[in-house]
Image (cartoon, helix red, strand yellow):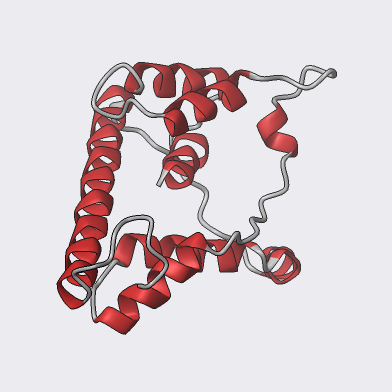
Length: 162
């Protein structure tokens, strides 16, 4: 969900890397405190040797390690909706289609956001959305673990018998 927050801040609110880094730093002091908030903040603050924010040079294409895919497949097998993880896996799959996305961007013009509202209020709503996604992710994960353990009471978090 952090990538979506970044996109809203960058393209929707027109924020700079430093402004976004400051926002993630502030969010990391509250309920969103996590390693993901820390590294996002650090990446947004970091400039390359030429002064350009490094995040602007990072290829927007992600690979798969398999953990999310494995979790989504397991959840489907168990009939358990882990929608947040499933959507994250699909977003990674979409990101890997860099060539197709580049060709499409040359033919399709997307909207040009022009935010005229209250930025601070929008950021508070965005923080709440991130917090809600964190709660949903944990809830779905715990539901999946509960479902798995009810089908296999001997399963432990370190077991590979799921």
